[in-house]
Image (cartoon, rainbow, N blue to C red; front, side):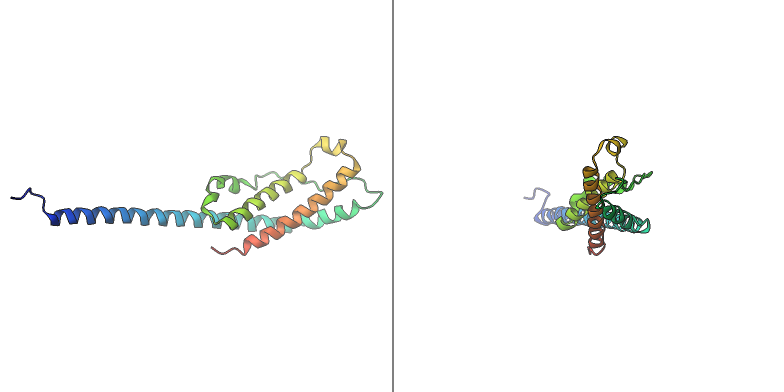
Length: 165
């Protein structure tokens, strides 16, 4: 007596179910790989662009010159001031939630670059209050830290440019 459902149908159903699960898994892996590649390449190329832009504007040389001038007793306290009109960090902010798809070393370096870039923008756009109320000692420290940050930012950007997927 047969119940209408034989063992060959059961085996076929199990194979079909396993195949569907396997194809779903492969699709999710491919999607994650694609997303990882997209996030990696976008953040890497934005980093390369920002470093090239900073170099083309000669900001490191300007900051280094101010750092050297700050060592003088007759330095007037003038700091490197840049008024960025665009949000050059919007790409990093867009992909902030996706940083976890990168490998740990890449994610750590890209996050450090992003934070140093924010510091670069903040330190080169000091508030009028800071400029008028800070001591010459504070401004000397600011000039030195700004130049050191730009050097570190560019070195880190060069390191990121060498990253391979």
